[in-house]
Image 1 (cartoon, rainbow over the protein chains, first blue to last red):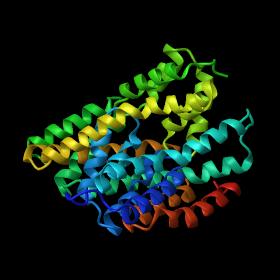
Image 2 (cartoon, one colour):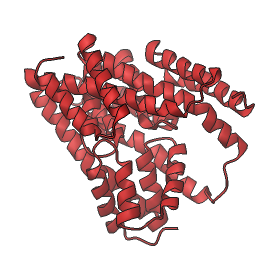
Image 3 (cartoon, chains in turn cyan, blue):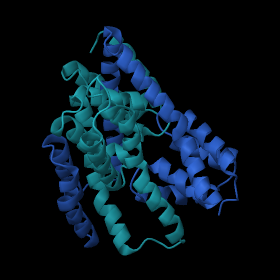
Image 4 (cartoon, each protein chain N blue to C red):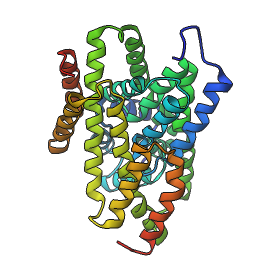
Length: 185
Length: 178
């Protein structure tokens, strides 16, 4: 939260954050909402200084450690920024516009095969999504509070384990917490 | 088409699969909807998933909304989405509050630092897995690099990338340059 004295102002914080997150949510095609994290961080950390990069990375890590959909980091970021109103606004912004589109889609969708344009859109956007998800990993590492060779080594080891094995990521996250408590990062 | 399912049954099923979903809900969605409840065949599930992925927003939530809507209308989609996010939100906020209370303690702070580094690695691994879908060709690789440099390193707004880079990618894909 930006201050301990109370809720953040609605019109100067909650409303603009809602609009920005809703736009981002509509741009999250192909890579899920993980790929909009860099822009979300740019907005709440760099542009507005509502929270720190370390808070952002921690909120992301906590949400990943909990069960449920991984978009919930947005709820936690909203809560960090502006308390309960922020959490509600961020969650609604992430879910509302896509939910409306999804319901529209059920009405529109038949078993039509995707046309040439739809295929071109998919084919053209996939490489961009991949670059954006790499960006998310990068900014999380930069903000992780251990931006040095030890933090980078830990991240790369974790990446290699997840990439090479089918282990449930929650165990790797727990191991990361243990490594942190032991004082290695 | 899925059978008619009551909103309560939807809420319970989606709560169950969301709470099982440590580190990713999708495998549990498949297990619950296809294998345990038998509400969908695996072909139906694949089709529903494909639609959920081309829609913007969180994939598993889109899937909940679409499945709930097809099963029981607006009430069904609210029930399925509520099950998917209700308890997980309570858990995440509890963790957030606990972190605010105890985050100043050195061991908690160090644990979070370790977790944050690992989660960054986890996302990098996801990106590596996704990059298998990118053909080894100069144009798609350049698109990935431009997106990473622009958003990750230069910190340009995502909107700029979407407005300037995405149309180029789609146009080149349309003309089948790779």
